[in-house]
Amino acid sequence: KQEVTQIPAALSVPEGENLVLNCSFTDSAIYNLQWFRQDPGKGLTSLLLIQSSQREQTSGRLNASLDKSSGRSTLYIAASQPGDSATYLCAGGSETSGSRLTFGEGTQLTVNP
Amino acid sequence: EAGVAQSPRYKIIEKRQSVAFWCNPISGHATLYWYQQILGQGPKLLIQFQNNGVVDDSQLPKDRFSAERLKGVDSTLKIQPAKLEDSAVYLCASSLDGGRGQVPSGANVLTFGAGSRLTVL
Image (cartoon, rainbow over all chains, first blue to last red; front, side):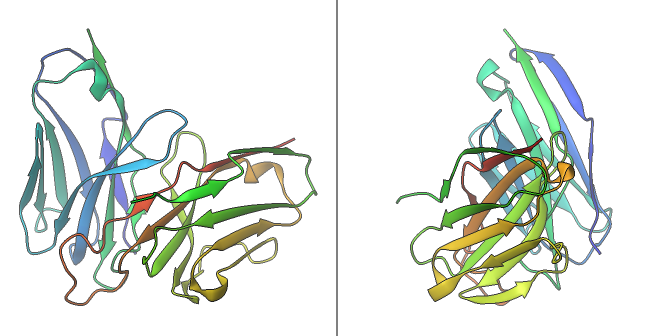
């Protein structure tokens, strides 16, 4: 059974700083890993999806990497902005579950102007 | 394209009452999911449908929760009777494909609705 852990639970940084959010998973036979953003009172917005055959995906200032052997994924945010403040969730699907995702608890990010 | 629609957005009920949530996925999406998100936690899958068939309902408390997806499009999630611990946001999501096979890039991307926030008093 896939288990997903995110560290840290909360992070506060000044505007402009580059930052890394961490995600670890227990089942190395991961099918895909997705990063989501959740704003208060809102649903989840998909940011990046990394298939098991890939090592990273990039979208604008975001870069996500996947290391199956170590059971880790990172989300790198470059030149952070106050608008990046949100909770970031990673979720993994195992080989047996496909797109059925197991979520981490999330990292609550605050970017201070 | 229109997103995933959910209603109601908010619902307050007393324990032992019943409640129903409705979801309309993105047109053409075969797979539909219901997740429960308790405050401060990540979403937990309750049930997954592929068209109108149940793929996984192993974490659905079947003594009080039920869900259906008639005609493979809309879905309803019902709780009867509700307990205090059912207070949460109920998120509906859909994806083009939920399988493991050779799918086009992005077919597994989940699109979430805004959620239905339930408060049980």
